[in-house]
Image 1 (cartoon, rainbow, N blue to C red):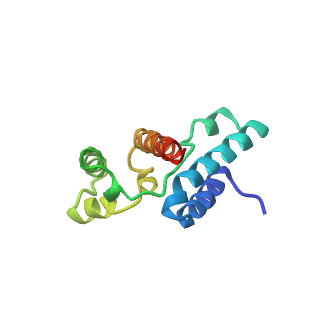
Image 2: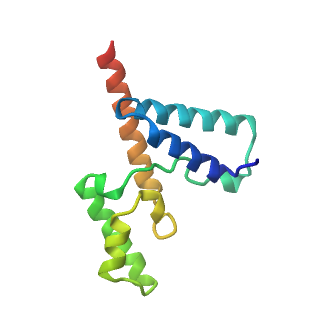
Length: 130
């Protein structure tokens, strides 16, 4: 069975979600390394390489308050632009996972922040484990 890159990432994200809290950061790094090695072995077209490389399974509600407020403003602007800005749609968007908003707003900035936070957490865990 062949998978698209996006399907592979979603499958691996599902596996990461199954990891215990203690092993989740390590699982994310293993997944990222696998995807990176795979991409080096099998070149993608330029358009595909510019896609978000990692779609985290995190809910927006779990993000810091300032990030949530920033996302809320962008969601409201995007929903207003398409004529669907209702309290229900805003609440629904804010209760979703970050990659569920990919079609509504540019999530790359938030993904980068989360990846950096995960890397810092893994480094801290490595240092404290020594």
